[in-house]
Length: 256
Length: 260
Image: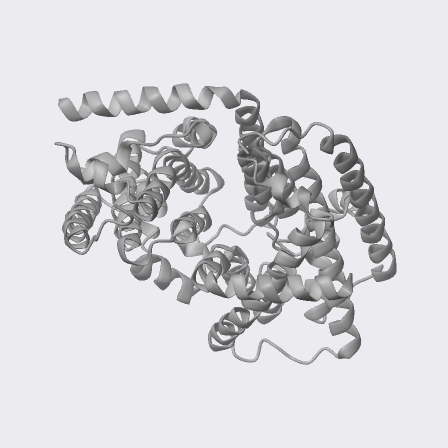
């Protein structure tokens, strides 16, 4: 309960700070709309020639794209600013202030920041879902459950990587790298050449974040697959907590 | 002038080698052409077009290379320095700050380029036999287009960055330019697969010559209208240069060195 209240306090503070850049927000909105239109056009290039990305109807492929948009919005609005802030804190030694607070430190550094730049992506994801789910006969609840679990998995992986900042200090681009791989996963996994399929399943498992929610919603994979996804997300989440605690033990507190 | 530039280059090269880890990860965030390569190779294998899979692999690898030669971040730097006031110190020097930023970018290529060879090895391992010698002429023309493309990208980013003098934050504007680049340059698919009507319009914009032209030249594909392409690219580069100069003159009067 206390954590929920803290979360909303952070959210309000961040929103107030961001409303100063309203013109920029409109620019970001236009960019996302344009980019989404372009990605739809890219998809259309395949379908207009009668190629179905390894067995996906147009509406079904749009579901994968919707999942990617949701996660991209989550990444831009929460993950990226928070994880970037961690390395800033390590550089300046202000991580100490967080560690001194009577609140779980991982919770604090994970939700403190928020930017509105990811909201247009969430909007586009919602629009795609609203069109594609009925058109493809997909179950939206399974889909959303899959996306949420995918987001947890994504968070855990990103946090694991971000934690290494305690030793390496600078990591602006490490976090962006994860976002970039996810961005590429907006096509169904079966569309990719085999080595890439393996990479996206076992090395950086973006397959589970975008394709799996669509597959479960379409009934290609049973609901049991959601349980598997939940297990995977849970394991990585616990791992990220353990690693954070381990890393803090070697945190020497800069400058102070 | 030349001596100053050389001094800048060696200083910024040393500076950039400190950030080699960062640059490596930045390089990796630009791997999108590899993923599109994977999609188109698979599609070609299923017989989508009459191009063979290795031709797609080759094309997208060179899209990646030319893109890496053209990466710029000066909008971001300018926004940051104008907002924090650090820009004022650059103005104190008896030299246009433009050269600082240009030297920074050129020197960074020296650190970035060896890393591209690592990815070349990965590429050759994934698609053995995809590369072949296209001849010195095409190699040179592709390189020339890439360098001109870099200059255009840099000038556009510089001009947009100067807008931070009015707007305080201009990085989103560069993102908009980047999205146009991504959609219309052949970054997502070879442009000859685009509908004919779309292509006719695109040929007048600078975008097809930023990725498609060099990549097609290097991968040995037929490219009609190379000369016209260079002319269009040159025209846009000139336009961007004039725009950057104009904004520089107008913007300097507005700068108040906040925070300094």
